[in-house]
Length: 162
Image 1 (cartoon, rainbow, N blue to C red):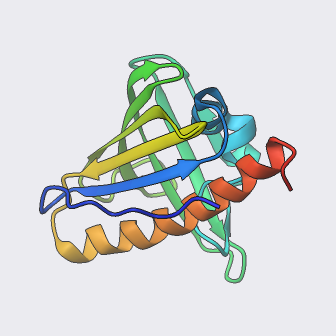
Image 2 (image 1 turned 120 degrees about the vertical axis):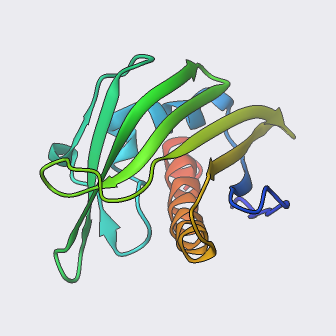
């Protein structure tokens, strides 16, 4: 299981580091391939149905997805633009909450995911920001922590370790 590490980032930036016992390519694919992303995106209690995800998987391409609360059915839509794709080392994309019709409903942030070899597995350094206030940053940190717990379990299952 990956241990969360939270080094100090910029005041308005979320910085999270996780270690996974799988190769870099497996972690990169979990982010980049929609067949994988629907298995772990979103915190516990949410699902991302495969029919609610679209991506133009190229630099400059856009993506859009929807998390569905499994208890209430509430939908949370988000999307953005892919800024950097360097398999298996790095991904970067903008992220912005949206209404169901695609109208932006929050300020845009930039997500970067850097992957490097670490003790026979992969270290993921995740950054997102800038956030307009601490409450928004804290909410994203909680959601991503839960998502990354799901990612860890997913990667172990995929590698045959569970």
